[in-house]
Length: 83
Image (tube, rainbow, N blue to C red):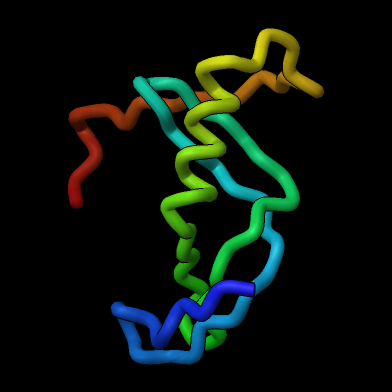
């Protein structure tokens, strides 16, 4: 189990957990389930160790057949939208 320390955003306690992770790599979106991560108990920020990130990127580069693929809806905001 990894010690993550306190959250760098809000100072909350970060605990080890397993999460679903949306990961963007070279312009593509990948979803990983059951990823070991630290989760801030106060704001929900996710923390990954370097080892986990390297494994994710290795799987993206080397995996030939994925367990599942899903369509993802995409919408582009109109320039007429005022913020």
